[in-house]
Length: 173
Image (cartoon, rainbow, N blue to C red):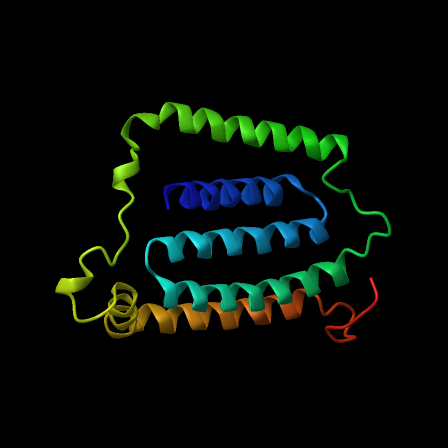
């Protein structure tokens, strides 16, 4: 299980490096899909199967919208890929930064500190992730309403920014 968690965390970090270093929206959207999958794998490894499934579905829906907007607004005939020299340079710089951060903070990480949420399942009535979902909807209800309002406001801002010359939101760039 430790090797699977290391694989998920390594894929998560490399996906973030791919998103940060790529100027093309097509390949950055692919990096976001990798990051979402690996992040949900980490959650799944810690015992949050329901939360992992919900987040993966929400991330994929959100990334579909982001990819549609970015593909419509940045219509490049020949986008830069991960093999371009500038992108490879940025990936090397970001990877070196990640390695330096890991080396500077490596003293407190051990294998036995990776404990899943259902380790004491025989003493519990509920699964660990179900208790978190109930807590999110009971005590975090105000934050959910604020988050929904911010997302709606963001949608209107993006629609207004892409409107341009009173021709509506769908236009040729």
